[in-house]
Image (cartoon, helix red, strand yellow):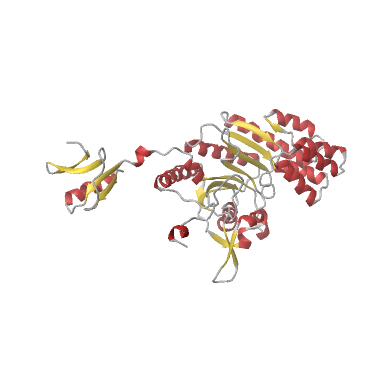
Length: 395
């Protein structure tokens, strides 16, 4: 194998060049600072953990996306995190042990065994925020509102739409219909693909009572503006209490979102089951016009940690900061604003360079054998005994 071939990155593993990396770091600081003004404290979970800790509770659904390795010290199986949310949940319950509401934020690299959805990258940089210790729709609304504010603040998006759903609606209808695991999974798959003909065929083959048959068929069509919620109240009137409770919760969140986020288009999808085996309540995702791939997503997940006795109410969101940063046009002018200084032991030059750097300027030394900057670049030159900033090519 040649050196050139050995330097190829694995498929789906990408890297950022200097301008993109600088933009990502700038965005990182802006968004973390904003979350902290909302009362979120930053934590830094480890890159690897023992697998039984990493995949606790509903986080077991991440098993297929998690790279595994053997700890050479203990012989135990470890995993490289595919999602930081379970780790943050563990920190909130096991380390902080706070009896009230806990708000935490985080940023870090994650690794996926396979590309997820339409995403091509297997090594996103995940940024997110979580609320622990509150089970009402108000904490879900705060998560949604903060997510929208961060996306707006990033400058990467001009117009947003928000999809809202609740996994409890389908889950409750499936329980009422007494679907077995195989039937539930088949219908779940068809609903995710919006395959109307397949949905009708499957539901008919289940030989359900008329109420369950009609409500499961209708579920795929309950998708649209807020009028869908009123229609759902009628269509699902014979649903179990837990389904009606989920619908009421979704309606309440829709009302709050309409008031707090008037510029964001809302879409309600009662068959939205993304993260069905992970989430336990409301699910939400932000989209840009013309894109079928969510730019940020989140929802409620109340069962993480229950295997270790620290399950708690939780809701939050996350986004791929690397993907977000690369959607912002590069500020080439800002990146090119460098002042070049000749290599010299002149104390007055050293002092001038240090002063400029303290004032936020970017100053780079030119080594003795290095070519001079091109015309129009800023350079330090000595004039009448003082070092001053001029432009090359000027006299």
